[in-house]
Image 1 (cartoon, one colour):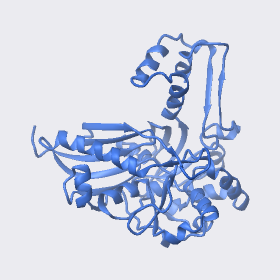
Image 2 (cartoon, rainbow, N blue to C red):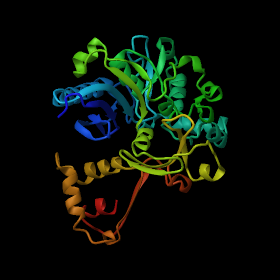
Image 3 (spheres, rainbow, N blue to C red):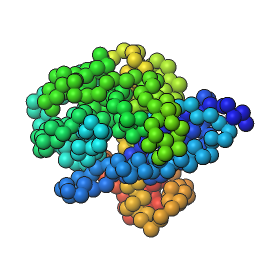
Length: 383
């Protein structure tokens, strides 16, 4: 192997798995390691409140990174690092990057009341036209509004707001930034202009000056500092490239051209279209479409989303609680024995009812299993 062959180290952070991979120029994964990820209850919060433990996420990412670096450093040259994560989540930080308030998870129910309130002060159709977003209870702007309403004192300590990619990048470089792909999941951008919407930010009594500098995907945001070098194994001064929201980078990795569809599946399953103009319509609004900023300026990504692997995790926890490892293999093996049609079993998971194709049917947050008695084997089969 040519020791000069170049690879990039990718921090691929999902809601259910945290992965670090070394990827070559062709997109081939040379080495990777992952660990599970999940939100945790907020210790000083109400029952059901969920947050992300950034220290635990960082610990796992560092472990993964050290392992990957150790496996590729002799035969490959690491030339850069990049971070992609799930969207919607972030938090207020101090000037040193420490958290002012825990990272509220998109799975936390606390902002549902804010979602109901915002629809009373601003027409949801107008919000969609400006931001490309439906009112979904986990939208970032709603978290900012919740913080402003219930713990307003936190803004006195805050230097800025960082989305999840920004929080990880700050751990690596000490730099503050925000990228358009992540920000487009906030319901706070004037999406046609690829910039902040002052009208939307005003709902949380904020303005664009509160947020860090825009950085476009592909820019160098900073360089690995001494502490991150020791924690991750990445060499000091390695450039860190601006990444962003994982959905948009999945579209990029698929090589989609204008007006091509991409289906990506992870915690969410998302059907996206890559468009060279920003178009909103009543039909799209009524069908539950959302629109996000593409990795490349001048493109937008209308999409329809449904919970995916998170449904499988829900099934595993409730129907296969005795399995501690190789549970997916067991679920697949059992499902393969089920006849086509799954014996008439119907499974309709509606975990986030204010998004996706079930939105217009007002299914509510519930899961429906329609059947006469069957064994658990039929549940993953019909999913």
